[in-house]
Length: 371
Image (cartoon, rainbow, N blue to C red; front, top):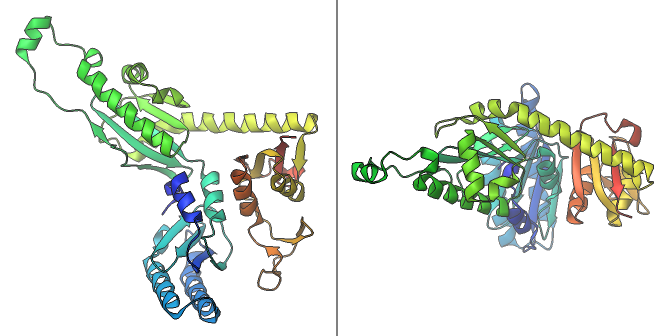
């Protein structure tokens, strides 16, 4: 699965307590040759390591051990290397497995616990900055899911919708004196009202920024008959059809998406500058980590590709070299940035990923403090 499939409901389900052992396997992957040739070997080695861990764990019964191994083997056989991004996450227990391919790196890990490891999923979801696109006309309404990786159709909650086709009614035209305009037609209003209701369900289940693409009269009427579309952060007045493809839509959305990114970056920078002036600012990994743990961070800004391996000592983070691993020292955290992101989101903190080097003067990560 991709990160845009990680809804709040699914995340809650993944975090739920499960019968031990719930197995989480993570590893970095590569999109292109020749680097991706090593991924299959690395995956086999990690699957073997997971099997050894299950064999050696006295808390795992023989039945559970066999079931989890079987699920893990099925998952490994199903991984499509052609769709590889920056990392792979496999989650497996006695009854199921899930495969996640993420546009954000993750360290090699095998974890046995009573719940799945979700920090890499959460950080990848936050970094992907997902959004919705509604392509609309008087005859159709199609939903698309977008991330930094692209755009794809999203058939859910009744989408795509197609207006019922009615044959011309000469008697009706004779009574009213003329054929009604498409956008004053009550059937069109009913159709767009239905699209608004479906859109409301989507936004309630998975809130994201919304972009609208359609002719101006269609977008105006959608605003008139409902309220969901008024949340849109961007609108493109361009005619679309039910056959309009995701690449075609993405091309039309390009300027609106770019404007949105620039505006968001400027707002984040302004908030950081104001916090620095008012002394409600934390900079650097250790300071931000402490602020998040204490619930004092209202906004965490982190550079897109910032990763750091650290040792946790007396509640503080000490950077370590690449030669030190958790296997050698249990206090070492390879994915501390993703762990921090998940902890921040859990405490109701806003997380923003910003351009590389934009926080170079602040240790690649900064926070606006609540108090």
